[in-house]
Length: 187
Image 1 (tube, rainbow, N blue to C red):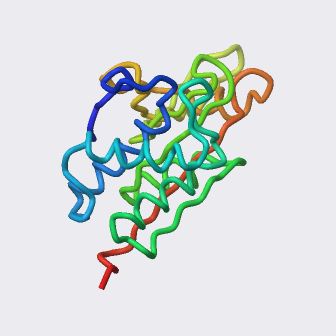
Image 2: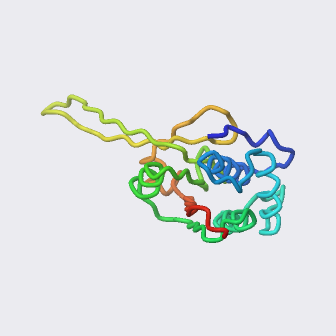
């Protein structure tokens, strides 16, 4: 996955544009050759379409427009039968595990918490189980983490999915934007 970050480009409030760029660049290397290899060329196209859909450097991108931007950019590249979906009530298995297991990174837009008003690229997940001894036995817990590229750093970061998705007062409001690109259907 391309690890470009927001500061690689001159625009401000461009986290959604960078997240979409990363994913489209990923698809180029998966064999979708009509998508340019050069991530800066992809970024320029995504920026143009985002501006047409209301992006400004002051306010950024409306999260409700992410799926439209994906579709318009892919249409411009000749992929006419692509599908994008914004999901606003999600589960770890459907929106994270299923998408990543099917080799489809997603854009996650986060409304609150550390990543308030920020879009990130979900590119993996990690699960683990812990067992703690308590007075009358053991307490078992399952922990699910979302692996992201946050656009601020080039390293992978992990978000505890449970605290993100279930604590609606502080962290868990946002969206997942999924993209499916069928094979080369431009003919």
